[in-house]
Each structure stands twice: as structure tokens, then as C-alpha cells.
Amino acid sequence: MSGNWFLDFSDEFQVTSLDLTKWYKSISTKIRSPRTNLGVTDWCWIVENVF
Image (tube, rainbow, N blue to C red; front, top):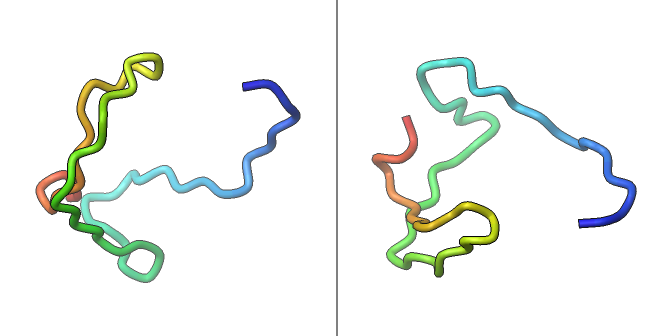
């Protein structure tokens, strides 16, 4: 991607639980298509993937 980009928000996740004042768990029953150009071969939003 070209352009002038800057970081607007960052959260390092150096804890053992999800900070529910900042984040919420989103559970999806759908799986997205692979994006091999990004190195992503599988997408899935499930509770087990969050702390």
C-alpha cells in the first residue's frame, strides 16, 4: 500500500486477560476467504481465539 500512514492507536496485549473496558469479544459463525497475498490462509472469529 502506498501513501503516508501513521499509527492512530496501539494496544500491546501484554496481559493474560481481555480488557473489557477497551474491547469486546465478537463471535462469528462465518469464516472469511483466505488472503494468501497477506500470508493469511484461515480466518475465524471464535471465543477460543481470545484469551
